[in-house]
Length: 306
Image (cartoon, rainbow, N blue to C red; front, side):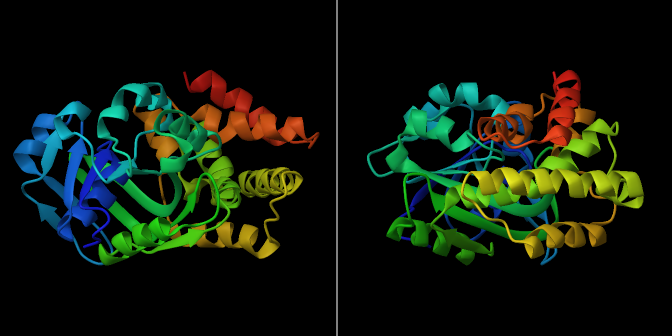
């Protein structure tokens, strides 16, 4: 157990919160889940994590309905959807003390800025989860590809605390590495998220397998990835060609994987349209990068995502 992070709050009990929070708790860390509608169920039945390296259940976990019930902690892990970021001003302050680290595991661009606005730049660390995990029932997370997390400081290069954070997650069985360039990692994640999450929704709720079995849709995947790659380059982030190719080739063996945005769409939940598609589009337009396919996909998602 890391001596720097004696107390941990997981803000959000969805797929990522259950999976990473469950692993941290199983490793012996003092973890409290901040939950809303699932509060009583989590208290009654605990949480279950299904993973490639073995399933486990924690029959008793610490759960709170309000941040005030938890109080200041050493580490806050944000696993809320970015659509709930208007709640950060209420949720985060009671969890903070002078040295609290806030690890933001949200997708998209502009999300770390939203956290830093409330928690302060000096507390904020961004994290990108390259993982396949879904919440399949209340308190149950199913991981089909463990993948890894890449973390980076919002306000500069890695610090000793960033490496301590990595040690904490590695000791809990999660592969995690540190980057000195958080923006680069965010652009890389969008190479996959923009096409696969977006087309899964635009296609009416289809899987990654459905997308790649259609020559027309696979061509659209490649085109969208190229637009993200070009936009990143305009912002000084060079994404190598082998990385782009790897994103498609890693997806083929996933089978009928259901991207998280597609699951939200099927469930009638708000979609993270702005951070994943809207903000990258605006950043492309600001640099004069032509992104016609991203623009068209964004218009579709705006209509269906509200």
